[in-house]
Amino acid sequence: MELSLEMYRLVVKHVDNRADLCSLCRVNKRFQQAAEQALYNTICTSDARDTFELCSLFARTHRLAVIVEDLTLFVGDGEGSDNRPQSRVRLQNDFWSTLSEALKQTKRLRFLNLHIDNADDAAQAWILDGATFRLRTFYCDLQWDNHLVSFLNTQTDLDDLYIADYSISEDPAQTSASALSSLDPGALPNLSTLECTFTEAACSLVPTRPVSRLKTCFSKTRSPEKRKELSLLFSMLMETTHPLRSLDIADSSYSDAFSMELLASVVKLQNQVHDLRYLGTLVLPVDGPTRLGFYGLLRRLSSLECVEVDVSEWDPPLQIPTGVRALASELRLYCPSLQRVIFVNDFERTVISVSHGTYTLDLDSNTETMWREF
Image (cartoon, rainbow, N blue to C red; front, side, top):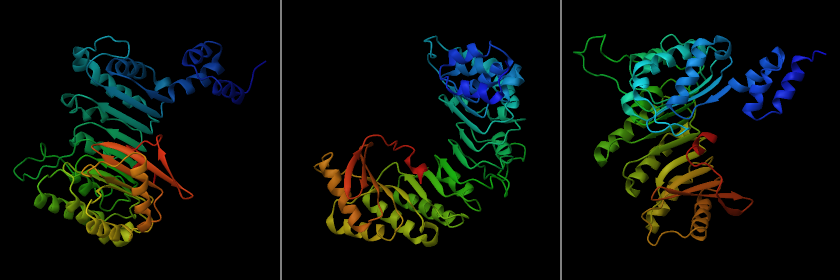
């Protein structure tokens, strides 16, 4: 008796072993259809060898490629998941062309994560040429060039973007063929979450777009230069078309004096931060009067639910959990909306969660992605 397609899908839904799913593909056509949907809808490779083999499959099998909606690809050196040395010859000769052909076939792709370990392999954005999918999320380690810009200009549905590289030529002597192009003014109209390693990228991508979650990093180290970088970035944040909900700005050299300037600049954004829920990373001053000034600024962010503070300079170091609990309680005296506080001590993070007046050490939260939750 022939079952309905819904029944086949229900059976497949309760099979979580990929080997069993492969076996179901050989039962009959209906099971094959349902099982292949489960097998290829979401794909994550572990190394360059796996990436090559999978992309080879998609490049030659359109029926499977169009199933893929979520694709995570890793390109790196060293050994693969089976402890076999990866072939750099393969990576140089036909790896990227195979990946390009696979991306042309994955027409229904919505989530693409491309992780590249070796910077020498990053100048391969041409693999996106000819791709017709419309992404919602794009994690990109590729070098910023005309190929990447052209691709981003087509991504009208993209709302979550990570870019590791960014550069725009300001040399008027360069020819139009060699100079890096800029995004179209109307590109990325739905971009709401942006993570970039350079504030220059944020300054270019934030204005006129609905960016409400931003993670970036100051590139300057000297205070005068960093102050200019801060001023430019925040002038661009004034031009977002949506209020900020999450702002995470890292620094190569943290200091309480500059953190006070950063916090004051956040407060001055006024309407842009009335709904700000996450803010980091700020140095929490040790000095009592300075800390009161810090709290005075913090209390003006009435919607803040999570703040990340650096306490690396505290001597003696804060005890865990008693010391951080006490300091979290002090922070909430001035900012009662806080529900979580992240304490950073020499890059080690400790999260204190607050619920009904109880301060709990939170060991399960992912501090790297927490800024995305708000």
